[in-house]
Amino acid sequence: DVYKRQDQDRSKWDREMIRVAEHWLRRSAMGDTISRFHLEAGIVCLHCSADSFEATNWNAIVGHYDILMNQFPSPMYLLNRGIAKGRLGNEQKTKEAIAELQSLESDPNLERYPLLWCSLADLHLQAGDQNSATKHLRHARALTHTDHDRSLIDKKLSDIQRNFDDPNQQPNAL
Image 1: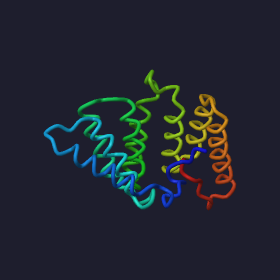
Image 2: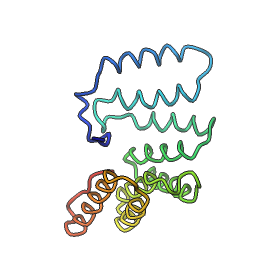
Image 3: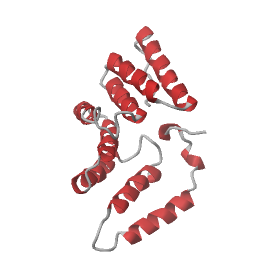
Image 4: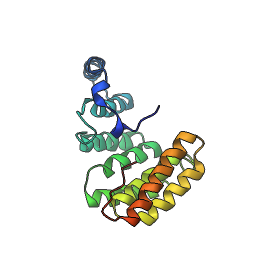
């Protein structure tokens, strides 16, 4: 089964393997050059070293993506930076993340990528816009090719509908 990062039981992660990876990342960064691979590994390291999803250092992850975007512009880096920016818990950063991801809606590399639309839905939910979230999730569902992904999207749509019925209910993040 595939589990969303925020739903994973980190107590089952191999902490020794993570320490080994951190050691080799630090060792590889001792040179004069920092490559995209160092930055990408650094992002993974930040995810893996956090005790919980909520304790993830999202500011550092956004910083890594800022450097990647500056040196190696890519719509995928922009998407991932927007997702990370949305995790900062700041209304202004959420609005910025929405604008960044909306700029990707017509990108030929991502316009048919369901994660773009699911991420936009998640950000719109954070901003309190359930109508836009629902629209983006329906679009993502139409692009999805797996039963598992459709099931996740259907659950999210159901959560949003329940939230319409009970405004005190908070839907789970994507």
